[in-house]
Amino acid sequence: MKQFLSTFVISVVLCYVFLFFGGALIFENYLVILVFVALIISLLITAFIHQETKIEELEARIKTLEGQCDSKE
Image 1 (spheres, rainbow, N blue to C red):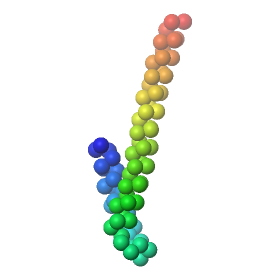
Image 2: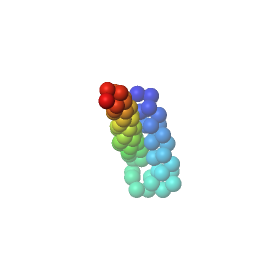
Image 3: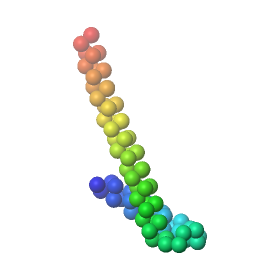
Image 4: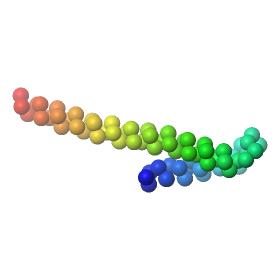
């Protein structure tokens, strides 16, 4: 949850910087758009980070299983 919140805060800041430098001219109510876009970005980033963690755990499991197979032979 901490990782998601930190990702969300970073996304809000980046979206705010974008809106400050001209993005607000595109949208009327920039605060709603800001939070919505930051939420989408942070969800995507969190999903990728979680996926990366799972891949690393699986790689470690495969290495231990390969080590067990090598020791039996």
